[in-house]
Amino acid sequence: GSRSPLVGSMALEQPKRPAGGGYGIFLGENRADFQKKCTGQPISAVAKMAGEQWKKLTPEQKAPYDKKFAEAKAKYDKDMAAFLAAGGVKAKGARAVRSEKRKAKEGKAKKDPNAPKKPVGGAYGVWLNENREKIAKSLPKDHKITDVTKAGSAQWKKLSAADKKTWEEAFAKKQAEYKAAMEAYKKAKGDAGEGEDVEEDEEGEEEEAEEEKPAPQKKLRKAGA
Image (cartoon, rainbow, N blue to C red; front, top):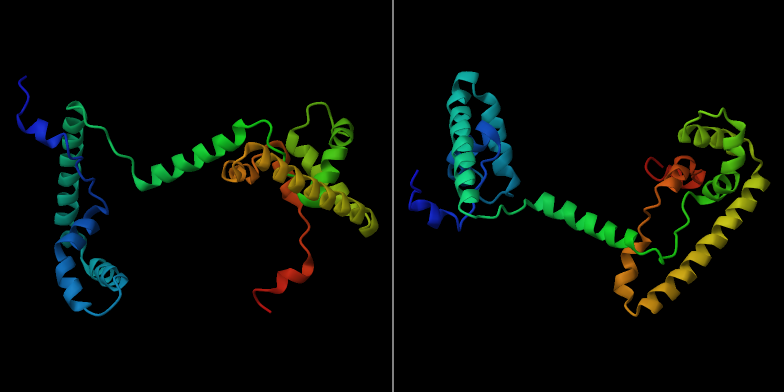
């Protein structure tokens, strides 16, 4: 059919998505009233008062607001369809933008094969990587990857403090090596900023090592002590 002349002007402005259900409508309609009552109080007081008032309403009293929200949502869907049909581009919500930025950052970090690999999992992580094959061989042929971690965790617990100390020193050495390699890597890139993201640890396989990271007992008493 013929296009409404309105569509052209609407296309420039993305319709605003209604949020908060019936409560959102209720809050919108009564906001000025609540703000008057909450003069001089923090903004959160308005939402708190509105929430308390909303809870006091009966289902019958809430129904008109729920109906208005359903109508607003239907109008939004219709307007959005017209907006897109007229060539409008849907702007992303703040949450989607954040998650995209994070993915882009991770992607950039992962794409560089020359970036030094960060050691993870503490002493246990070093020990597990050294003994992974041996543990895997001792398990049935159809074992899962998680079985290796479980068996490794049990074996690690049996190690003496002296044995564990050796692996703690090995981990400290690996960390020092990583730090030095990272410095060299950043210098080589000529832009310290570019290498920053790489320090984020995206090693899928070694993440299992995080499972059993013995925490020093002393630090645990912070909360209640």
